[in-house]
Length: 410
Ligand code: ADP
Ligand code: ASP
Ligand code: MG
Image (cartoon, rainbow, N blue to C red; front, side, top):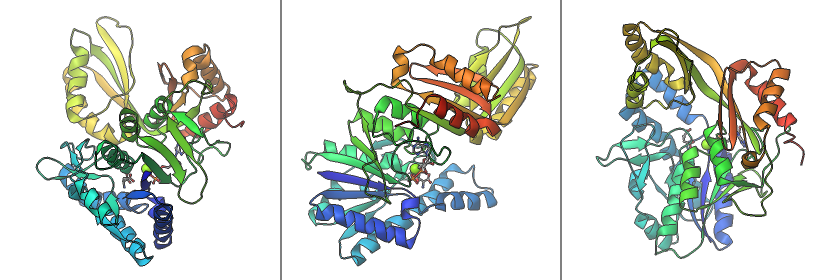
């Protein structure tokens, strides 16, 4: 078996933890497996670097932000490689550009285009474990890029997919994501003590949970693993337990109605009042936001009155100030007023079983009503229902929904 192991920030957060990771890597090698390792920056490092950039007034300088943030992973690959060598193994570190992790040029949220696994092949055939910096790549001009917060998960899946596709490697490839919880839970175990480990979850459900705030896997890593059929296994780096397998929908899979509850705190709402309605109004409003790279989520437009309407939409809170700067002058020109709320969050329930069950959304609404939580916006898809609520009610709502849908019961 070829095992690609990814260790997150907490798993490499101290000297002792890096040494424990080195032991785990060596144990996997001694079981006879081929191993490649992807690591994140040490816990807290990416945030520390972001704060430093803020002090310089540099967070909008996207190119330099990526140069800065990529250093976190450079430290961890070197340290882990040293720890493995000190423990009697053989390892060699690689930065993104050294395995030609090619991305587009969208700084801070770059997408991977290709990887050249030949460098890894060289290390492996010399009996060395490649230790690869997650989260970073390079664009066609050689600029350093990063893949967005949590992006090391995506680096790991991309390496696994490229090894799987490489005719030089004929092993079965598996990607193990080692983190600070035992796997994927019915909800964030740090919010709800009743959360239960899910042993098998479908890619569809995992994609919804990840996109709705369950940061245990970056959404793009799940998309990539699903597309290239990479076996994905989420586990704890602190224990030996089995964790969660992310699987394609198989028959015989017990389809519970609701599989998980998630909370996304990175949410804000903008409301535009008295917007004059004409063909193209919405395109004029959202076009510039798209160009800015702002990902708009829910959009609600009220029925027009006297040719004017009110329209609300949600977006990541981190993009709020930049969006308002752009939007306010545009809207003022149209005689419309803009207001924003940055104290909202999104609570969602997810489950493939919803496809064939009625009344799930209604149950969610009653549970929130019973807790006195006002729903500000709603959106649904085949397998999820999301509600925007006040940020202060987010955790309460998660716990109430988790209990009402009996997710803690094994
Ligand atoms: P890493 O640094 O290993 O990449 P992250 O902090 O990115 O770890 O992701 C792990 C965290 O994801 C957990 O500590 C937990 O708080 C959070 N989380 C949110 N939702 C879930 C969920 N449904 N299952 C497991 N963890 C979750
Ligand atoms: N170090 C990056 C982050 O904190 C990437 C990662 O951890 O996956 O977001
Ligand atoms: Mg992560």
